[in-house]
Structures are given as structure tokens and as C-alpha cells.
Image (cartoon, rainbow, N blue to C red; front, side, top):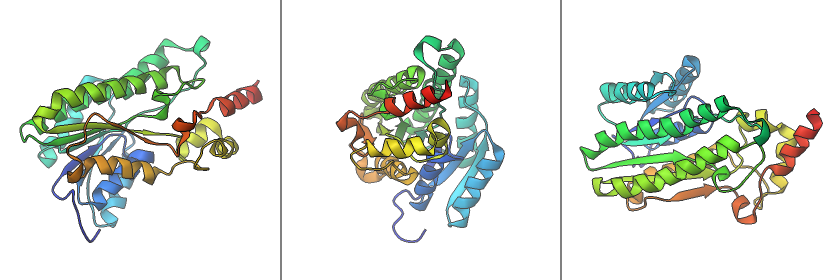
Length: 268
């Protein structure tokens, strides 16, 4: 972790950072000097991520808990500020995906997606922004998805809440810019990680890669670099934007309909 550290002395809270994209973001921020608050529901995974960052010479601290309610969000942000003093950067990354056909869609699936993707981002952002406003400086970064802009079978809840999250990004950017707080979103396309393998299977993902102009799926690190871009001091005038990390998939009108339908057909 030698060299230029543009995020030195900045406290970054990355929700859902014990694995996947969130873990990659936490590690990227730490490499650039941030003090990282690593959070998740699995204490073992949280501690593992903290250990990885510290082994590289970074500064990370564990916070274990969920984000299912406003009380949970207030408890997390309060604990981070209590231990680390402030929150300079917030990355709302925590989330999960449950794919269900529209006609079989359940109310509990809708509520779960609202709670973890939308409500948690809103409540954590409110608490962090109030702290940032006292210093007239801060960054809030939402992790959205290509599903916010492109329809895909099974994404009734996921696509809808991600679209809402991008709308929230724009509203927040307008209201918080006068307070020195920049708000942006990163919208990945398909990423090669454990969640995607679980949803589709490795063979389906190889087929999916063939439909993407870049010819492959994104890596976790590529999404992390996009989030890092919004966190850097030089990006302070950029706000209200959604940055796609999708290898040209959105531009080409590609999505997962084909492989999803193949998988459902194979299951019947």
C-alpha cells in the first residue's frame, strides 16, 4: 500500500463488504488510504475481509449486523461514527437477488428487496449525510445494476428497486450538492462472482459472455475501480450520475433473458 494515497484520513463505510463486489470496493479504498468500516451479517466473513486489508497494510474495522430496518441502519452508522469519528464516504452496496417469474412473484420477496436495496440505502445515506454536512464534504455511492434500465425475466423486484435507487441518486444529488456532498451510482452488468454462478451456473455465464460486446463478464475489481473513481478528490464536481460497468451490454441491448429461459426450461 505504498505510493500516493488520495483517500488518506477518509473514513469509508461500505455496506455488504464481507464478500463479492463490496469486499473488492473495501480493499480498493483501503489501498488508496481510506480507513474502511467493513460490515456484513456473517462475523467470520467480516473478520476475514478486515484481515485481508490489514495484511496488505491497510486500516479496516469490523462491524457486524444487518440492515433490515431503520434501527439497524442507525445502529450501524452510529457505531461507525462512534468508533472512527465520522463517515466521509458511504458506499451502499448491500443487497441480494431473488429471481421469481412475475406471475409467481411473492409479497415477501418484494419487501425483502425494498428493505435491503432501497430502504437501507436511504436510511444509511440520511445518517451519513447529516454527518458529512457538518464538514461540507462527503461522497455517497450507490451500487445499482444494469437491471435498472433493462428488463429481464425474474427481475420484478431487483430491477424495480435498482431503478428507484438511481432515481434516489438524482434527488439526493440535487439536495446535497449545496452541502458539499456528491452522490453517484455505479451500475454493473453481469459480474463473475459467486452470486452470479449461483443464479445461473457456470455454463450459462459462459454463454452470457458471448452476448456482451467486450466478450466477457466484469470482474469485481473493475466495479470497485468505478466506485473508487467517484470517491477520489478529483471527482468532487461530478454528482447525480450513473456509471455503467457492463462491457457495452446496455448499449447493445443485451440482457439475461435467453439464459434465464434456458435454465427454467431445463428445470421443468
